[in-house]
Length: 99
Image (cartoon, rainbow, N blue to C red; front, side, top):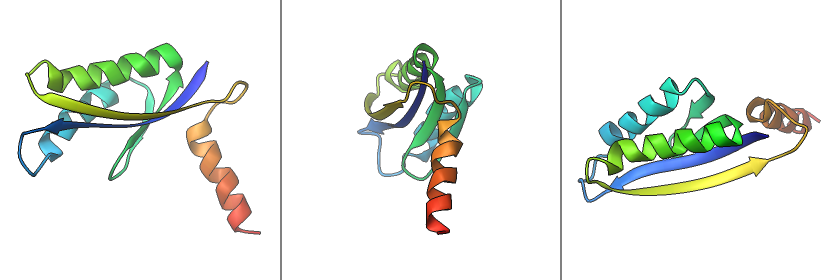
């Protein structure tokens, strides 16, 4: 079933600048082949539930397997009968804003 998630994967105890660690997780997400979009605080990933959750696990483990304490914040939207929700939600919002 199509799933859209917003996920933030971040290390703890590695200093003030986290971008190099976040980049490692983002590279795993990009390599998954799933549709994704990274923003300043979250990355959205869309696909089938099992594929999306495997992607989150793999991106988390790239840090955790280095012995880095890793926090994951995840929000999921499962909407049966819909696809392309990452873009569709924004399109429907923009249509409302134009009224």
